[in-house]
Image (cartoon, rainbow over all chains, first blue to last red; front, side):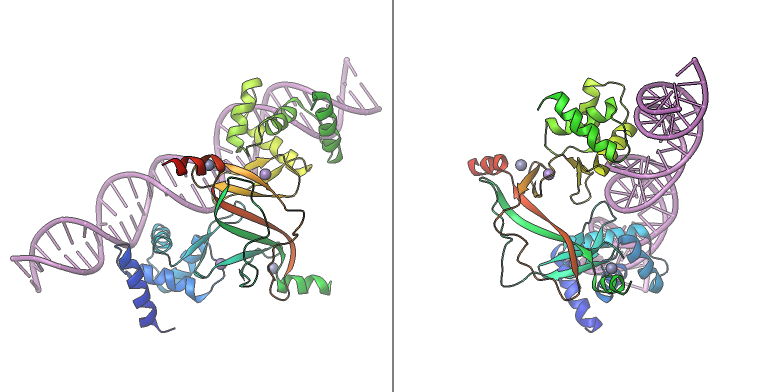
Length: 146
Length: 146
DNA sequence: TCAATATTTAGAACAATTCTAAATCCAGTC
DNA sequence: GACTGGATTTAGAATTGTTCTAAATATTGA
Ligand SMILES: [Mn+2]
Ligand SMILES: [Mn+2]
Ligand SMILES: [Zn+2]
Ligand SMILES: [Zn+2]
């Protein structure tokens, strides 16, 4: 993915919500594209600071917020932990590793649609999310060796 | 459900984790049994205070914690909101109403077991939770009338 | 009755996030 | 190129939900 192309995408999306493309927004977005491990705002801040030492925490929060509002990024919540950010905008669910705390994307099976779950009468579902827990491949492998 | 019966259950469970049955723990648990609307700690505090005016917030947190540890109560998390507490220990999922913020139990369909979702190779699932969002029956009805 | 232990309590501390208000930046106009 | 109004960034204060601390109180069982 070339920088110019990403910029163009970014600019277009931001423009739709009347926002400008700034160096900080570009940096924060590129952090999320670079390593798709669902970093927290704090983690994004640390990574962004590497290439942009003067960026502030407030700005990271502002940028993340803007990116969420213009539909380029999604928030991911798990238990009471810090909000994590995800730049994969395809429909997907998440797997949370009990051992290492990692968050992994789980693509929705194009075959089987909705969860085989009948809602009681009257409820109107808009969306659903599945949160899987257990061991990620690496942690499962380590456990097996012991 | 008679008080003595509930007390006996409570006492037995608490004893298992080496905890005592206290007036505060009984009160907090009874708040959760009385209205199963998934109250937050704050809300439990307010309700408990009605019948036990000297109970403290710290104690409510402590009691809830103890009840969770001895398996009588479950924590329920949604987005970044305050932790909510649920005394329904049957396997179930949750429906969150976008309109009124209510949290509703959704029983798992005894028919269809797991969600029809294949985890990538190597992942070892321990559990999964489905969070439904949309409109609860009351809010859906109100919307239809407009 | 007494000592050991568990529990409750008020308030301090904490982590994540949002708010505030001033400084800075930037796009479009002269 | 200088000017101006609105958008953006920034540091730090404020807020929220929760956990920690240490002292007071209650409970158990010898
Ligand atoms: Mn994701
Ligand atoms: Mn429930
Ligand atoms: Zn892991
Ligand atoms: Zn509702």
